[in-house]
Amino acid sequence: MAGSILTTPAGLNFQIQPSAERVISAANYITTFNFLNQYLPDTYEKEFERYGNRSVASFLRMVGAELPSASDQIRWAEQGRLHIRYNAVTTAVAGGVVTCTVTDTYAPAPITTAAMRVGATVLIQNNTTGAINKGIVTTVPSAFVFTVAVYEATVTVGATTGGCSVFIYGSEFAKGTSGMSGTLDSEDEFFSNSPIILKDNYTVTGSDMAQVGWVEITSENGATGYLWYLKSQADARQRFDDYLETAMIEAVPAAAGSGAAAAGFKGTEGVFFVVGSRGNVWGGGTPTTLTEWDTIVARLDRQGAIEENVVFVNRGFGFDIDNMLAGLNGYSASGAANAASYGLFDNDVQMALNLGFSGFRRGYDFYKSDWKYLNDPTMRGALATTGASNTNTIGLLVPAGTTSVYDQIMGKNAKRPFLHVRYRASETEDRRYKTWITGSAGGAATSDLDAMQVNFLSERCVCTLGANNFMLFRYGS
Image (cartoon, rainbow, N blue to C red):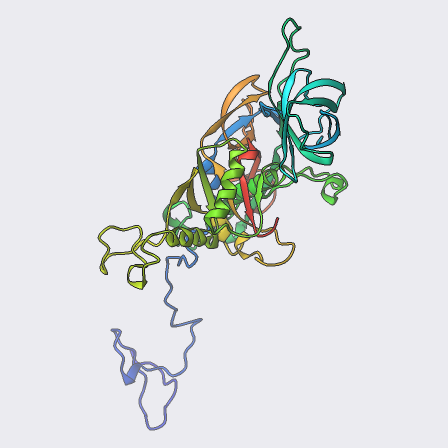
C-alpha cells in the first residue's frame, strides 16, 4: 500500500514506501518521527553490583551466640580476684612497724573495708623507689588501716602518701595461739544490661505495585533471582540486619541528665562502651613493634590469661601487623632479592606471593581478622584518624572460647560465649526478629492505607562477659 508524502528532502522527489521487512532503504527513510520514543534504549536487566557485598554484619555471628530472655534486665555475676592486693597505700614508719592506710577504694566498686586480718603476712613495695619489705599484720585498728611488723632489721619502703603497694602472700602464728579471726568472702562483681527495641519498615504504594518491573539481583546473602518492587524492601531488610549488629557494638546507656534520658530513652551497653569502661584500652594508634605487643601481653597476664585471642582490625592495622611480622623474618634484612621470601618455601617468580599473616604467637596466640565494619566508608571507615581528642576504634581483641558465669535468671552457673546477644522471647512472643505486613495492598488488609508496609522489629542487648579480657585499640586514649 502506497504511503503519503511526509517530506521531500533536497534533491529527492519520490513517495515514502513502507517495507515488508526490516531493510534500510531510501524509500522507507523518515526524517521526522516521534511515536513516544521509537528507539528504546538497551537496558541491562541485571543490576551491577558496583560496591560488592555492602553488608557490614557478621562479627557477632562469628564470635557469639543468641539466647532468649524473658526479662527486661539481664544480670550476671563474674568472679572477683582470688588474692588481695592494694596499689595505693599510704605508709607511716615508726621503728620496725609500718602503719598502712588503704586509699585505693575505687573500681570496679568502692570497697567498704580492707581485707586484712591479724596474722597475715604481706609484702610492701614503694612504687617509686622499688624498695621492698615483708612483714606480718599485728593489728587492724579500723576498716582501712592495719599495722605491719617488718621482718627485716631496716624499713626501706619509707613513709609515703599513697605510694606503696601491698599484697598478702601467707600467714604466721605462734605456738599455742588461736586461729585466724574472721573470714574473707568471695568478691563477686555483678553486672547487668537491658535490651533496646529496634524498628524499621519499607513502604510501597498500591499504584506502584500495579506496574511490575523485573530486576535480576544478587542479594547480600548470596541468593540470586528476580525481584520487582521488593528490591528496595530487600535492601531495607539487609540494612535492618546490619543495624541489629552495629547497634550492639556502638550502643551506649543514656547518662543521667542527658537529653536522651530526658526524652525517655535508656540506651544499652554496647561492646565498645563496656570494653572502654571496664576492659583494656590501647591508645596511640596501632602497636607496630614487639615491645608494644609485649606490653599488651603483660596486660593480659594480669587479667584472665586467655590462651587464644582474635584481633579484629581495620585495613591499616592489619597491614601494620603484616609489616611488623615481615620485618622479623630473617630474609627481609638480607637485601631486596630476598626481602619478600617469607611465608613460602621454594619461592620463585611464578608463585603468587602471600604478603599477609593470619596470626602469630607472642605469649598468647593472636589471630588477625579484617573487620569490614571498621573499613566501610559509610560507617567507621570514614572517621577521622587525627586530632588531639580522636578516640576512633581501629581494632578489638576478643578472647576465644566460653566462660562460666552465674545466671541469676536461671539460678545456676552456665557456660556462655564471652560475647552473646540476649533477645526478649516467651512461649507466645518471640522478639528476636519480627516482620509483618500492614496496609491494604500486596495481599494485606489491615488498614485503609493504599500501600503495603513491611515492618521489622527486634528487642535485644549484648552481654560482654569478662570485659577485662578484651582490649580496644584506638588512636587516642
